[in-house]
Length: 243
Image (cartoon, rainbow, N blue to C red; front, side, top):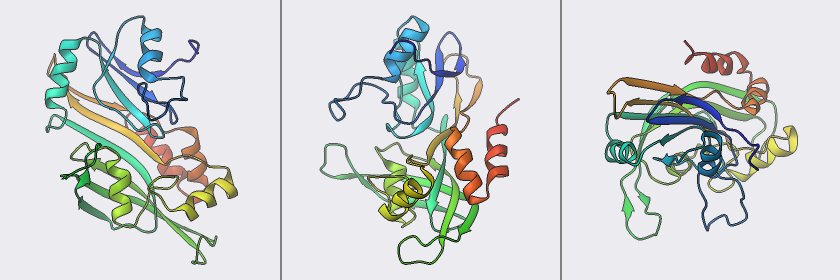
């Protein structure tokens, strides 16, 4: 367990960001009691010091995950995480041809139920593909590559929002379309959620400099890119954040 190492994207005296792999929990939770690996503990072991998660990603979501290295820095980030100082950008693959761009303004129930909470997401389509496979009732299958920016930070926000507009995220076993999830699993052996926390743009809480932290896409995105004819686009997205 202790031999597992996370890919560090950024590190200074106050912050550390890692590229969380899909399937890894951020921290221990009673909702998944059988999991034995957690990003918090792995990173503490790797750095030899305490780390403080300042946001979270769903277990099946990959990408940029940010930690503070002191409680004081963690408090500063928490106070401003949903402000204009932070912008989280995700890449996702959707069922169907989604609109070229849009705003999803759809309230989401709080984690403990009860009244719904405001939730807003903006998105833009980056590519489209139609492949000659029948999935469900249609003779061909259509997909979109999109960049999504959650303006608010609700649990499962992007997964719920794209379900709401009938462009479910591919590989989403909870909010997705079971026909497309089964198709990619059975036809190509792809059994992953195609949602990746691609880029975090933020004002450093201690130095006030502007940081842009980007996480390379997992290898299985490259396989999906070949299937959908997006290999060049996937490669360019991986390169776009490098200096």
